Length: 396
Ligand SMILES: Cc1cc2nc3c(=O)[nH]c(=O)nc-3n(C[C@H](O)[C@H](O)[C@H](O)COP(=O)(O)OP(=O)(O)OC[C@H]3O[C@@H](n4cnc5c(N)ncnc54)[C@H](O)[C@@H]3O)c2cc1C
Image (cartoon, rainbow, N blue to C red; front, side, top):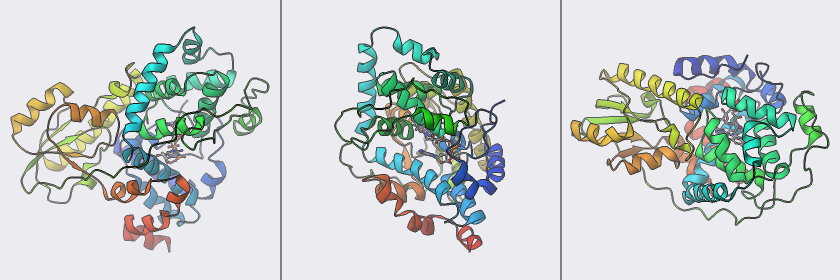
């Protein structure tokens, strides 16, 4: 049995309601423990839903604040802000995504022998690692601590290029995200915060898997960090667009599937369509499970949008996008696609689009200029600015 990962908003809201009572002390105390598939109760499993914005960061954080108050739910709230921080970090440095893709392709071309194939098949002989490969392939998800151990073993024990590990995870994760995945792998390797790497240790794995694994003597526990140039300096956040004063065509994609909270009441939506290109995550595509999960999320977003604005909402192939846009002859409005494969695909379609950014992103992303700890200092101010008044009021 594995966790039920919501692929629609109704199920995501139900999961959010279910987990909200555990967002306080239970989360802070239990979030690092990974008791294994079907037994995890101290993390939310909401990442695929948040990643597609079937529920928004604002909704999840508001639930935590309203139920527990900002201090008792601090740890949970911070984790959600890690997501916003990583997104902002990449948005201010879009070249890191293209540099990752080039390095990944060069690393793959330079691979010799079958160590990579053994790792991807979960046939390394390191029981915990092989089990995580199987779990990732079967469920499309791994616990955060398992992702950290997995990446560390990939880089420092198996001595495989970090780029190929990041690519492997991205192809299999339901919540696969250009910013969180790439920058977390860089962090483990010691190139995100130069010189500070994350080393997986047997005793830590034994403790936090509750003894399911005990890889004593199997891991490289004294490695040097990977050497690479530090992240580039941040640029400015490109400006977002405004809604046109006339009827428009709404284009949905996998990065933001809650148009009901993105668009103002009275928005004049005259046509709707959706595109998803999960296979563009990697030159090797993505797993069938990921394709299905992204397709279900997009279908859910389109069905809600169609019901809300009373127009059909088909899913299009990317190649049909220019014809759809020309056929309607309306301005095309779309939620901001952050740096990653969807933004690249939409730009390559050649269709002019007005890209709308949420207040959440507008407030958080420009703050991702340095490390997470300076960013974290801004969280209380961000909460005051971004949460609905009733969330703050019910926390008092
Ligand atoms: C090597 C590596 C790769 C990762 N790749 C991805 C990825 O592609 N997509 C992705 O969404 N997350 C990624 N993460 C972050 C994290 O592992 C997952 O977001 C988390 O495990 C999701 O489980 P949950 O929903 O139960 O999280 P919870 O612990 O319940 O946290 C609530 C929410 O906070 C956010 N969050 C929690 N931890 C982190 C974190 N460390 N970084 C960013 N956001 C976080 C997620 O949106 C999550 O749903 C990666 C972490 C590592 C170490």
